[in-house]
Length: 308
Length: 258
Image (cartoon, rainbow over all chains, first blue to last red; front, side):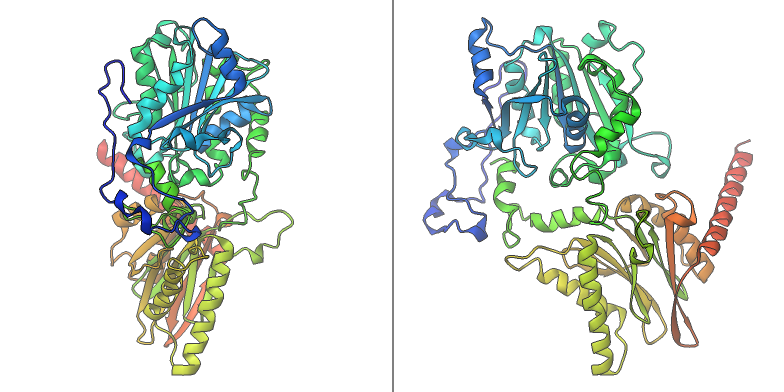
């Protein structure tokens, strides 16, 4: 868990509420959650990455041991991931790897196939029609203490010198601060923060998404990603959608299907760098985007009668 | 131990506390409530009002079967937000309890009694293996035998409290903040004031239009409780009045600034 660079080393966390000496009394039955035993403190890791055989081959083949990638798109939370799945990935992606937080590496066995909502992996995909584009789905929430390690792990397999990065995330509308009263705010709102490298290269010229106004702050994994990109001079843009609280990322929201309105909030980002040129004949028109979003699981009304 | 790891061990079984005191299934149920559309309850001086966001029915669906408010007894009505099927079960059980109480005790239930009954069922489901909590919050309005109106709110954990005004469902925070600003006993002293406040509150988060809102009033005439769901024409007229009042207030503010 040692960190290179300016960020201080993070100390491991242990709960004094969990007493390792009581292992023998615990039956580990189904009613107790189904686990067969506690981990030792030495087994506890923060983040671990598992790559597919194809990705490992590519890493071994290159001189610099990095994956081929010029554009990295990161979705944080179910709405952002749903949007990227609908509008960027489609059916045209292969799984390159998985990053998991809070489990030891042994827990990642056979995890590349476990893509259900309830599982904890953050998957890394490659677009087949444009292999230079990688998409990372951080649908499972990354604890704040693990954000730095997550980012370091993700960027360790990429060539940051030739990388453009976009991160999409959500924050509650109620946290948006503006001169207007909160009750008059109509969500969702989309705002953007860019690294100076992106601004300096003129890549943000003419972009349709408004800058995030002070005193609003970017938080969580998007903030960590943008900070690291700022330090390493990587052109990066963070698109944050302020949506109803129920559609934000984080437990337990991730286990409910994302709302199409929350996903649709990211539409203007399709016309901005670096999403603009991710796929041929891009960006799609508005109608097509909405059709794609409505096809997402749970978005088309299977929950329409579930909740009243 | 990271939060993620803690939750993976403690969020699957309802009967297990996490080391930091969470019952994750109950918290998840509270999130399911936020998936439901907004419901507002107001306790007036001489009435109790429920206003709910009306969901658009599908083209081929009979919209009489899509209801967010239900009468439990002729003096108790309930609005809810959350899982539709769970609401149906709770409503049926509450109705049976109301009738059973009348037959056994020869008195109608008090609002506190029926709120405690509904909350008690919900709490039982948070402490049983093989079950899950009810994913809904309810607003119960009505009159006690002594002629006083009451409003109670229950949530998936089985907690219940009496309120002067409250909201459940999506955007409940926004509506509650509005009510905290605008509610005064004088403004809801009469029926029209209470109805208008409920409408104003729900229109904070719902598009204006009688097709988007249902409003019910529980009143007591000569000691006999009466439940009325306002017809669409009356709702439209009230919404037009509210819009006119808003414009007049905005005009006054502009004039004061100048």
